[in-house]
Image (cartoon, rainbow, N blue to C red; front, side, top):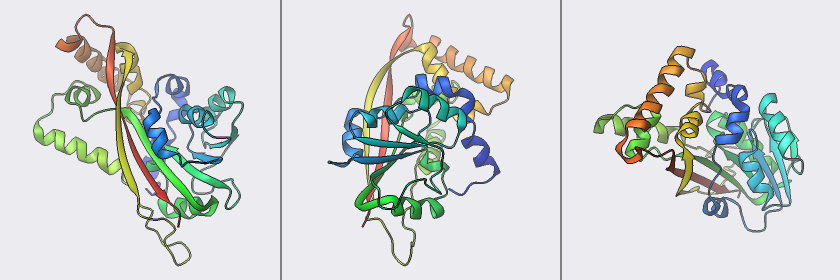
Length: 261
């Protein structure tokens, strides 16, 4: 994705909610991590590490993790909680890492903010031969009807509206690494996988989770308040959750990976 004014504004919004982002955003499932991380990986570079939701999981599995994050506010939370991880300011388009220094470059819910024409050559540069680029988007599973409606502010979708919402989400997860770099394409054919699980959450935390997404962060105050109130009302009135405070929230990790030639 090429950065325009709107994209730049949305991508820089998360620092304002860094603490809630860190508290509420889900990381990938263990099964997803098994699929994303190549066997024997020692040196991992994470792009757009945010507050370290994925970083902490990587550090449990890999000897050396370098976390790259452009936002000062997000990086401050990341650095305060992950003392064993190397934390650097930087972007995917200009990685602060030596050439051929990584077994894995990985990003969680960040790749759709990068300029692929500039980022793909940088990722190829820092990866070792047969290294891997892995991408993952984890969050509430909006292919589930009630979750799709909740996330839209309590709206009940028609079949046509459901199809349109699902198509927009798929476009956000589109990845193109078929880019000429010095006369060749640096990556083999990509693979994708989908992993689903459930996460117990209070209704209040599930509504608060929505406030960590750029579309809600950047709403006008009145619009945001109305949207969150509608979400709360939807959960309170949903027959499956009446009288419950903690519910099992359907989650999913959409995973993508490609190996460097």
